[in-house]
Length: 228
Image (cartoon, rainbow, N blue to C red; front, side, top):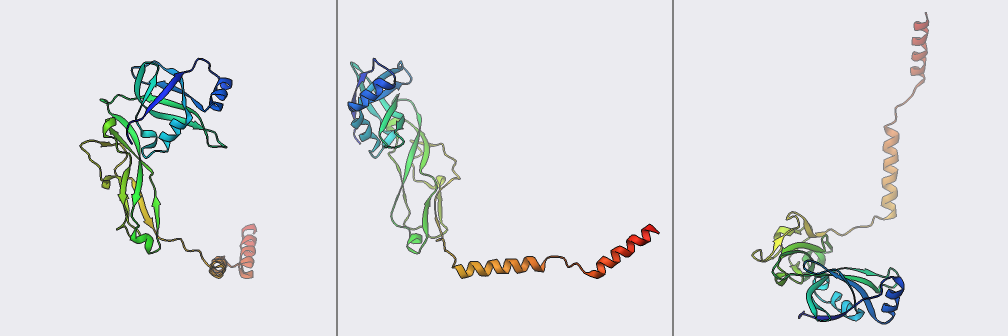
């Protein structure tokens, strides 16, 4: 997405009460911090932050935050949601230097329909994000994986991702499995489960040692000999 500019206002009153009143007015309590700036409490329009989080680049979106006459490139480092309503409660904005490399968690997206899925398999996305180190301007919005040719049992690891290694450094372990096509889970019929349980019980009974009267008598006779 094109760079967005968000207008912020300095917060003079802090605490739960003032924050609730801000949210009732459609504004989100937030904090801006990072290299080269002093930590500052601000508020922004909730709709602006919500729009950024719902964009293609999500929390990795670098945007311009203006507070009075000052302006900084920032990204959403962290945010809090209401556990019941899912609405935004608070956000942390981290300043970004465009000429310094940073570590980002970049989301994975798949395209196409796997031949293994068509055959009845299930596509299991093991990793939803990959950690990359790069300059902010070189940060991809997401990493696309074409799964069309994957058959049941096939998988793709981090080392096989299509990335421009001249611009990004992969932090995640290259051997990690990103996604795989697993066989379908087949539910057993009740009759099959009952038969397996019956066979298991028969096996346990067959393996139990047999105690006979002869063994008992032999033991008693050995005891008498010891007493004599």
